[in-house]
Structure formats: C-alpha cells, structure tokens
Length: 136
Image (tube, rainbow, N blue to C red; front, side):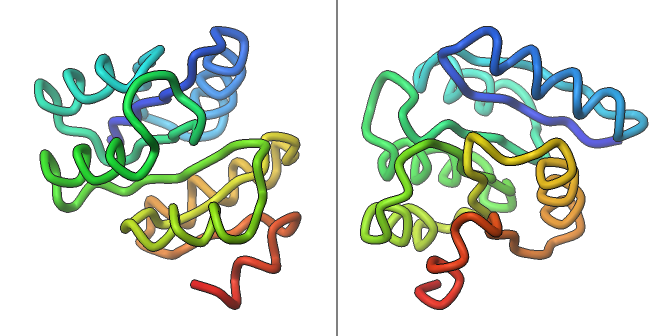
C-alpha cells in the first residue's frame, strides 16, 4: 500500500490526479495539500511514499520546499509537475533529489507510467521534456 500526497493549489488538478491514482493503483491512500506549509506539515505527521509536487505551489520556493520535504523523509520519492519547462529551472529542480518530472499537459498514460516507475525506484521524465533527460 502506497501513501501518496498531491501538492497543488488547484482543487481540480488535485481531484483529477487523485481519481487517476485511485483508479489505477490498488491500495493507495491519497491525500492533498494546497500549499507548501500544509505539505510540510503533512510530511512531518505522516509517512509518504510519493509526493506529486506542482513546482509553482504557493509558499516557499520550489528548491527550498523539496529540500525541506526530503529533510523530513530522506527516502521520499518526488515527482515534479508544472507548465514551466525552461531547461535551467527544470534541471535545477530535478537535481534536488526529485525522481521525475511531468508536464501538466501529459496524458493519463504518462501520469500512470510516471507514478509506477517512481514507486518502483526508477526515474521518469515526460516525453515532452526529453531535453531534460540529458541534463540530469
């Protein structure tokens, strides 16, 4: 059973991701957080196997946010997702210890593949972001 936290300030995005994970992964518990502070509190209080993290979540900066989450749970797996695919920004975020990056426009199939790979300790980069694969 995997415990998953979705961190995004858009409730529609949260609902869609929660639905996709629930429909495709048996025995998963999925919780949501709207901002950085809530996600840090959740991670401090609960053990998560995976965090799906919008890189533009309100609160502290993305790098500090990722570092804080990993300081609370060193074995935490993080998938980043967002609409900003600028190589320098995306590469910097991936080098923080995150295991993957999804484009917000990725298909249901890509989301399932990313979650499956990362839960199985494999990295994942969206095909829309292939230019990042060489940089990481």
